[in-house]
Image 1 (cartoon, rainbow, N blue to C red):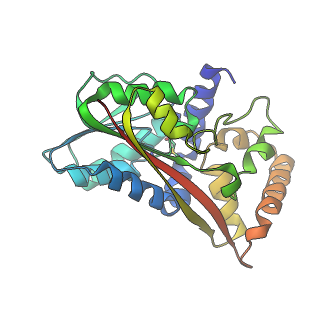
Image 2 (image 1 turned 90 degrees about the vertical axis):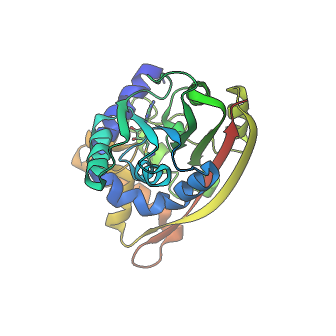
Length: 272
Ligand SMILES: C[S@@+](CC[C@H](N)C(=O)[O-])C[C@H]1O[C@@H](n2cnc3c(N)ncnc32)[C@H](O)[C@@H]1O
């Protein structure tokens, strides 16, 4: 897919997903976000850049970790997501977070100005993830840490068929590179290609729990990366994609709902 088109699909897709996102995903993404923050080992007073901050689930935890003496720049492509994140920061009384609408591949922040650069579950959506990792490296001071979390191997993510199911009904793939970074050591290699060193990579298994088919359908079609395509489907198409998706996750039915397998890859590297 053309990179500009991919960015537009992402930007406006996540604007649509914003209202559903926290309800659908906050609990499910927590294991990846916990490990990301553990590997980042943030200290009080540090200056942290966050890429693809979304609704601010990780941003607020960074703010707690660095305390009022720290400083955070939280960036995302979607205005809808940034509005949520900004509202959360105001609610929690965090005045030390600056929110910027930036593409991960071109951050409007000065070089060598942060102690850590974090990206939770955002790189899979970026047309050129190495360019985004290079940007994370650029803004780090020497010795600064870059930490990124992505979804793991396609075969270990029970919800993965949503992409071919939606792609069959749109003109260009929604997320052409989605599982690339989670395959093997790709994320580590891409960090090295971006000029980062001392890379450490971990994989963790997880289970996505849905109490009902309706909950599983809302999360996947309205709260995530296919939200834009889905919003344009007519009623019959929606019914068809619901049926196909529920068939694809049937092996993990618990009777009432579903317990889908998932995998995350989290990697940490440093700027030399
Ligand atoms: C799954 S959400 C993750 C949000 C947050 N980091 C979290 O852990 O909850 C993915 C985010 O990536 C953002 N995104 C997608 N493409 C992007 C790009 N090229 N540059 C910056 N952000 C992007 C979306 O707007 C969305 O907010």
